[in-house]
Image 1 (tube, rainbow, N blue to C red):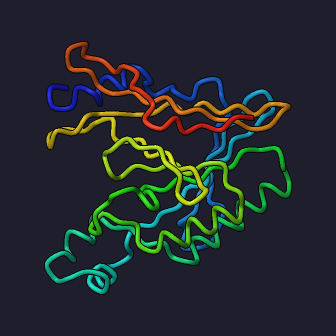
Image 2: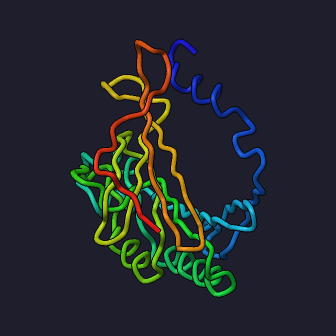
Length: 219
């Protein structure tokens, strides 16, 4: 509690029942090394599908191939790698959902943010162009991610990416942050708005932050 006060506050606010009142299910949706999974939420007959992809480096050899010997160890921990078979799994799962339920919202989730502005190579998602091109071809609603410990919402080519920071940051002048993403699936279309929150030491609680670039989509 003393070391990670923001984490304790996050649990106090949301607790174990943060999905109370909503249908929830997690399942594997593809055979690509079980690296693609689906989580979906249902409310009033409307569905939000979150397709989660794991782009963790599969071996230290990949880090060694793409980095200098001095950087390869850190890169193995800090980098991700977009494998084409996992991307193909995301595409197939997205197409399957949209074919059967065209009005549903599909967003993709990955720990590593694609084309994060100013990111160093040792923390980069390698071959993130594959992910962005696939998202564009599938007209993906939004990509959500983390990894950088920096709150930033931006456009990667024409694909919106919400990088939420970290709710439990400690040290290195990091500020604990998280985002609330409001998604509206209505008669006039689909819309979202992102509300960032940051830990305030004086108040000892999370408070709303100014929206850096107002990333949002109107219906």
